[in-house]
Image (cartoon, rainbow, N blue to C red):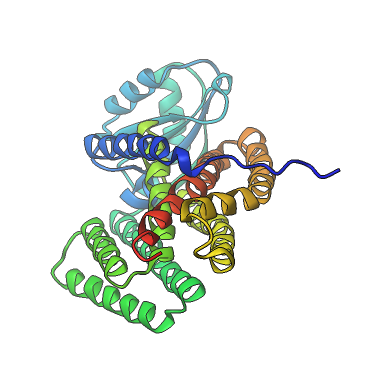
Length: 341
């Protein structure tokens, strides 16, 4: 006896999904604007990161007041590990090597009145932090750009056109950088020009995939901003991993859509074809996401404080990436393809 074929109306819920995504994106943008961007770690801003464990309970406010009295102008404090561990990550603006020694450990213990142990010290100069920040942004931009080339060639057989567009965008980025334009502005302009070119040259699959990836990255960064979590190099690594994961999910769905369009063209409504394609690949999508989330949750719960934020970013990215493959990339493809179908 055959099992009844599942047919969930995903496309019929696209308007609800668009509203939900819009709320998440606007919340992310508002948070980033009001806070002046992500909460960059010392990897990107420069300074010193201290990991300090106290023998007894102490409040972050007490620690901050103590560091102010010791002559530090900028102090950011974050709980490390469990609340009962009394362990903190403290970011300060000084980078003098000689200062961070056993003498500082004793001075902190004396000022706060609780024995303190400095477990880790990391220092990054301000210029190095700036360079790392710029390279991180460029890494994400070029990842999206090369993905565009692949998607356009893979699904629309427009390899030459996509390479020309990529070369043009790289030229735009280079010319803007000559005028000392801010890196975020350069990336924004390049992505905006990309979407215009995709529309003009009818790169429909690439548009759906890229918008879904931008959706995933923006929401992940926005959630980090809303929760005031530190944005460091491991988070960039997580974002690049999310881009690859989300793209893989989208390609599976797009592959089935393309096959079904070829075999059923002019016989079926385009929205039904895309909805059937999503249902055809749903079990694979859910199974892949579920097994991936089990590993990520294990890292999140038992991986310790150092890997916690990376695992948290991956968790958000996998959930949002799975959602966007179904409710963002596919509906956008439907809207664009309706013009030519």
